[in-house]
Image: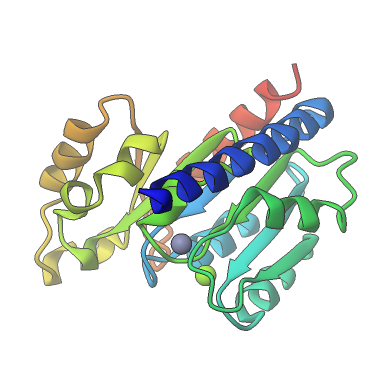
Amino acid sequence: MSVVTIERKVLEKNDELARQNRELFNKHGIFVINLVSSPGAGKTSLLEKTLEYLNDKIKVSVIEGDVQTDLDAQRVAKFGVPVVQIVTNGGCHLEARLVQDALAKMDLKGIDLLVIENVGNLVCPAGYDLGEAMKVVIASTTEGDDKPLKYPAMFRNASVLIMNKIDLVPYVNCRLSELKRNALQINPKLIDFETSCTTGFGIKEWSDWLITQSGAAKK
Ligand code: MG
Ligand code: ZN
C-alpha cells in the first residue's frame, strides 16, 4: 500500500513542476510538444526532416532525452537549432524536474516551438506531464497495428498520432486503416498524420501544422 502512496506523491510533485514549466512556456508564447514513441519508431528521424523543412520559417529549440549518449543531440544540432541534451543514466522517462534543469540552460526569448524528444518508451512517459501543450505519439508501421491497444494510456494522453514509415506498408504486417482505427477507438480526439522520412511523404503537412500551432501559442 505504501508503494502506491509514494508513487502518487512523486506524480504530485511532478505535476507541480510541470505546471511551473507550462507557465514559463505560456509567458514566452512557446508551443511545446512532448514527442513519445517506442525505441526505433523514428522520433529523431522525423525531427530531422521537420527541422529541415521548418528551417528559417519559425524558431525552434530542442530538448533531447536519452538513456545514454548525446548521439541524437548531435544529429539535431546539425540543423543549427539550439539543443540541450538530458541523459537519464538509465531512467526510462523524462520528468518535469529534468526539463526544468534543461530550460535553465536555454534562452527562451524568441522561440516559437520547443520539441522535447522523450526517452523511447510507451509506458511511463504517458504518466509524466512535462509542461507541454501536447503529447505527440509516433507509431511506426514496423511495429504492427495493435500498439494503441497494448499501450492505451499513451494514446489516451496524446493529442496527436503520427503514423510513420508508411513507405514500408507493403513489406510489414500493418494495416494503416486498422492502426488508425485502434488509436481512435482509444482516443477519438487524436489528430493524425501519415509520414515517411525516407520518401518525405507527409512532412510538409505535419510541419505546416506545427507552424500554425506555434502562431496560435503567441496569442
Ligand atoms: Mg532518438
Ligand atoms: Zn520510466
